[in-house]
Length: 188
Image (cartoon, rainbow, N blue to C red; front, side, top):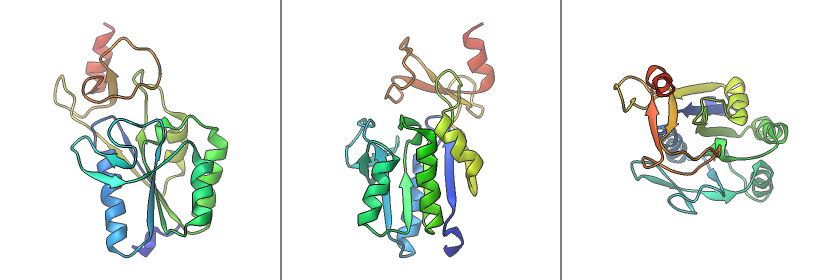
């Protein structure tokens, strides 16, 4: 697995597509291979557990809550790790340039960075940080959930409620994965 040293791996797609499960799988494989790992999650994500990343199918991975990428950088000044996992990158409401600099610093130091995050919000607008990470990725995986209306590959996380805030924590009660065609029919 040494071929991943200093590489950026990004898992993206809609909700319920397996992004966090893929991050978890990658981190567990690196651990089995003997690499020192750490996983960060945004402090805003309090849906399941404050000290764990929990997938929608209830598997989990220990994680450290941070408010931004600078806090990750501060943590790594005290802890020597090989692999940095970052879940829900879309929830970090941060300065994009600073966040990208932190990731670039990790990569220059030979750390492997594995990121999971939504590519778009509920209005199909890209999350800027994830968009920027996608174009910089050495390995980019676009995951697809199943459209709840027609069964084809989902494209976006449709919000089922009238809340218009950009970030609303939730799961199946708030969101459903939809393909482009079914999403476009909503406004018709």
